[in-house]
Amino acid sequence: WATRELSITFVYLWADGIHFNVRMDEAHHCVLVVIGATADGKKELLAIQDGYRESEQSWKELLLDLKHRGLSVDPKLAVGDGALGFWKALPQVFGSTRGQRCWVHKTANVLNKLPKANQPKAKSALHQIWMADTKHAAHKALDAFVSTYAAKYPKATACLAKDRNALLAFYDFPAEHWVHIRTTNPIESTFATVRHRTVKTRGCVSRESMLSMVFKLAVVAEQRWRRLKGAERVGEVLRGVVFRDGMNEEEHARAA
Picture (spheres, rainbow, N blue to C red):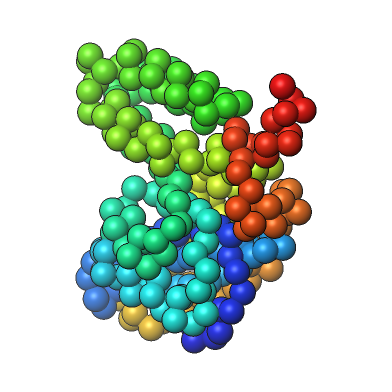
């Protein structure tokens, strides 16, 4: 499975490094996972490899392996959390692939830099950013958040503002796909089940046995994955149709 040909085109990638609460025979290792969306909107498990602390080199090796096995056309968008290793490696392998930061991870990171008493209101304000109908409205909501919290909590607002463009990249893709590409949920939801199984694991686990267990559980979960909403629009994305606020030019003209 890990050496199979990948000679089809993938429009989106989701990438994440999964850490498990078990002792492994090699410290600092995690499992790197990549899921892709095909031209017909089907989600497919592309890679499961172990990596050293989600390092740039580990991610680069994984992405190069995907390319050497046939993934020759750069995906249009890659979705991931704030792990710097992945974002440093991505342009070295897929130079034209845009990046979208996961809103679930970013929200958690920002809230962690605020007092607990402020978190419910701040979470609601963050929600207004990524649920805005247009990129312009999202920028305004983000600016409002920064203005509200910057004076007392500059670390929280800096954490948000530094990834502004990557957080709002999804607006340049079909609105039907936003629910899929704003977060790394395809990976998170799958591996929540895997984590539940590994919690029961006792003793030290070898690298090989961990990868084998994760792979088998993920393959079972893959059978329940649903196609992208608006799968018929994937072809437009692959052809390079320009989208603005989730609509192509013709739809924008009608809306205007």
